[in-house]
Each structure stands twice: as C-alpha cells, then as structure tokens.
Length: 54
Image 1 (cartoon, rainbow, N blue to C red):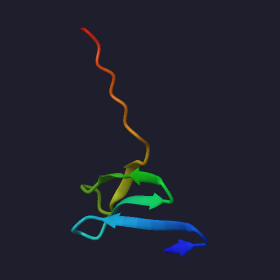
Image 2: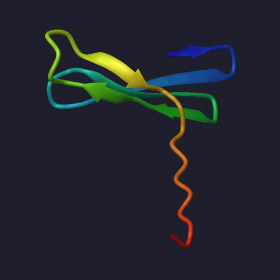
Image 3: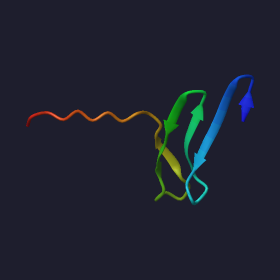
C-alpha cells in the first residue's frame, strides 16, 4: 500500500496471521500468541536483552 511517498507492507505467517509491518523505514515485528482462540498480538515493541556477569 502506498500513500504519497510512504509505503506500507505487511508480513503474514503460513496461517495468514499478520506477524509484522513496515511503514517507510520503520519495521515492527509482532510476537503472536497462536494458542489462543484468536491470534493476539502479545508485543509489538523491540525486545532488548541485557546480560550481566552473574
């Protein structure tokens, strides 16, 4: 989908569930709970892992 100079793309898994989107240069990946009766987006933010010395 393109509006003006901004392009939007969507990504789907093999079951047709949306798992990501890209708007312009910004990409969002979804973590989806497929165990629920309807797929639900659990998170649409970046995950950051910080590992320490413990």
